[in-house]
Amino acid sequence: MLEGIRLPQVTLSIDGVPAGREILLVAGGRKPQISWLLDAAENRIVWAIDRGVNVCMEAGLLPALILGDADSASPKLWKAARTRGSETLLLPREKDETDLQMALRTVSERFGQATTLVTGCWGGRFDHTWSNVFSVLGAVRRELNCAVLVDHRELLAFINNGQSLTLRHEKEPAAVSLIALSERCRGVSISGVHWPLKETVLEKDSPYAISNRPEEGKPTRVALDDGEMGVYVSWWER
Image 1: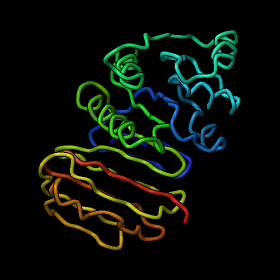
Image 2 (image 1 turned 30 degrees about the vertical axis):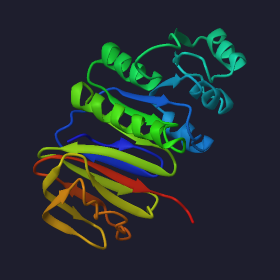
Image 3 (image 1 turned 180 degrees about the horizontal axis):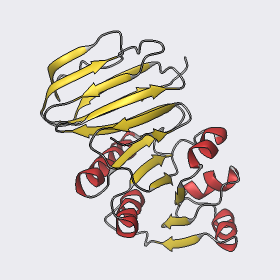
């Protein structure tokens, strides 16, 4: 079992996933809280994806690499990061892949199987969010140990055939949801929540297992026998 992906509000462990190098990709969507970002960056390699360089530099965080087509990044901050030592990979603006997809492929090429955290991925247009989610899921299917979309408000992790996941909460979430990503997910169990499930079936076109309430002081454990599933956690404050 992975010893745990430590984040400011939760530690996430996935059974069957070996420990490996951890990379934090900072994209240009909703900005994570600065304090959260600095904590999440600790002991991780940080890469900025295009406008993510703005987020990093405004937080006082120098990324090891900046990757993108520079269509939304501040030219001043891009240049300042490069001057201070950030490696830059300038991509063409007309291309088939998104900047995030290129970043995920570059992680795989440089580090092999890595644990990748993607922040700055929420809060934008629906089509961008959809692309982010399935780009990360595709990278997990092909080459990465594990990848998680996360900021101070939301987290989405993936498990598949026979895997289990444990969430040890530092900050109690508002909700935990299970999202079937294959047509059927069989043998789905969840404990440490108000509405537990045991070896049930979830179907993609009937997503009812959402907005579960974690039980205070208890870890949340999710298991899956067959299929592919997203585990979504929300810390939204009303």
